[in-house]
Image 1 (spheres, helix red, strand yellow):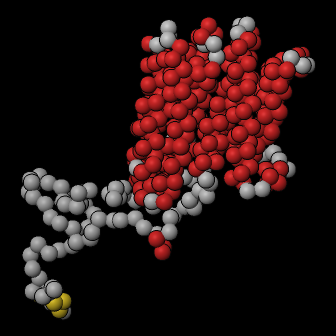
Image 2 (cartoon, one colour):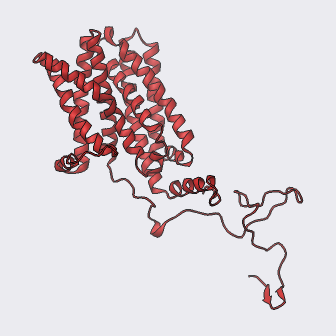
Image 3 (cartoon, helix red, strand yellow):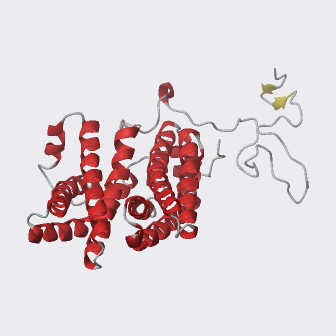
Length: 350
């Protein structure tokens, strides 16, 4: 308890070294930084380090209400479908009939399942139909809904024509249409999550769509390695290897440039999924390159690339949930941006 007393003649009974410190020379670690006059000397501030919270312990932003199984699965399956259609068109042009059949069938299955996952998360099918009542070019969700509505029928027609041998000219037209829409289908979910206020998603808005596209390419290459005959897997091996390597590299770049929200990728389920994703993807790349002459190694490589791509989407999803629940991922980057613009001082990262 302080024994000092404020009188008309000033402060009486004050103890030296008990003044509250404000502003200048108070460092992040809670002590004054050394000065030229008193090198190595520091004082403890009277104000404790800031801890970020919100009213009633609620998050500052609304946490996504999506289910991980539905939406992370939707991200993965949509990317796999879009990239597979592109590979199928290339396989048709180069005369790889079995690879084309595998990729068209995979595109139909993945596209259909991604549609089911989205509708299941929405709760009722009519909610998806309601999203088609308008078209808003500035909304990734609106654009994505229309893309999916056009892509799935095209992929279905291409696969059915390939499997049944019926309406071959229509099947070729559908293959071209699905291939044209495929890159956008693979990329738009990355733009969708980056367009939210969730720190771990929006913080990587410049790289996130490219991560999704590379991951989709890795998955499509993995599907070809897993299911196509050995004599036709060369394009799938190249796509899976390049896509997987770019995916891993872009994730590292994204996290480095993201700042504080990148910590969310190293917490909880996101950390586990991320580590497993990198291990599976790099393992798939290694087996795909070194095990060219082994059918078993090729199939294991395909499985690894598929698994790595799926786990990448789940890691990104879980990191977003973590960053939405913790106020520091919202508050600290905001204050750092203000400080960079000459506003309030940057707070210590709690």
